[in-house]
Length: 490
Image (cartoon, rainbow, N blue to C red; front, side, top):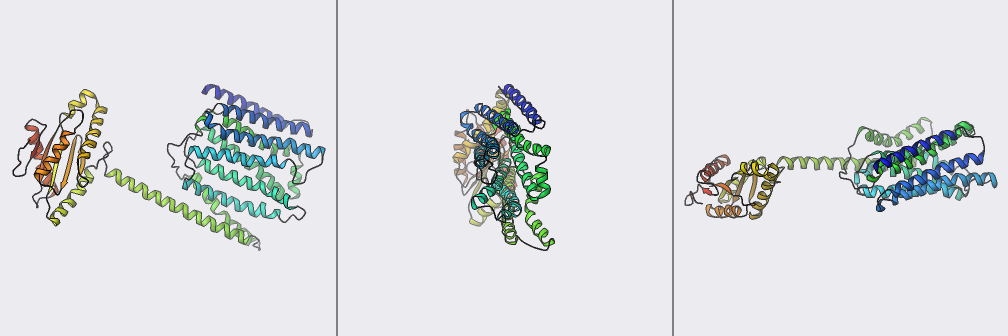
């Protein structure tokens, strides 16, 4: 199946490339050119639907929405040509505009569904990054595209609204593209084809804007046949890239939940965020250089928004650093296999426990527990079984202890137990309960020592270790105690 998808993708990509290349050499016939563009768009729509049909039923809707957007935009080309040639409707708004504009909400909804299924939509870091980039370029669009529209006095309100809708749609797609790239989940070819399609659409729309801002030179370029066809081909390429993404073998993974949502702040993303953040001061500097600040309020609002977003991003980074540092501290004090405190945590806690016992005049006991014949168990059942025994035994033992007690893995099959506020008899009873719940019919040997009120933690543990060796010498499956009255008790 994967091979079939790959072959279909290559066949379609080659067909679309040939069709777009052939478009450059077609006769200068308006109907033929428009029909050719519509055919390429509809072919891309069919390919997207075919790719969607190969998805699991629950994963098809995002692709159907993208297909609907491509179909609308491609159909709009035919409608626009019909309006121009049959009814001389060229001024905004025309019947073609709803078709052209239909691309934006349909594609944005499809991509939003992909994001929702790949990642938590409320991924704060990804949302802030998308907001920074969209705000920066949105300010640029406002200053050079949206605000100047109001200066064209002959346009009515509906025409203003329609023309403004196009850059707003581009900003919507930019936000969706940024958020998609910042999501977790599979980062295979399909993701990059979708990003390439969105980027190509934005390139095409931006090119038209630049030409309009150039005035007469831009109009001359628009009327140059070869240049106009290249610019029109940009949109045809965007349609085709969506289809290539849908047919990519990796498309089946595009809507799958992320295993890991954390995306690193790489050099490319850092450069993009930096560039977007500098748009506002750059615009201000340019207008000051020109001797007239005409968009002061817009730049001030944009700068404020960008500043707050950058602060939020920094706060998020600091929180992540703190979480990572805490995770490192936890890992440094935890045994990876059993999840119990490790030797480092034991060495930190025991002196504090002895000091509390000294201050409160309470007893404290320490024990070393060693699984009997653990090497033989490993040799018989294998090391994975030995690991499972260690995990099961540590969990069972921990369940018999009080919340104030401490059990830690000291190394290999050796564990240490700290029992605050108990005498030798109570400590012996606690170890007996542990011995009773040892899984897989296994046993342990234990050495128990009760603190004398003066010795250090190392000296206390040394006495427990000597008692452990006594337990082993006396046949294992025993608890030896060095406290008066319970010495050599099984």
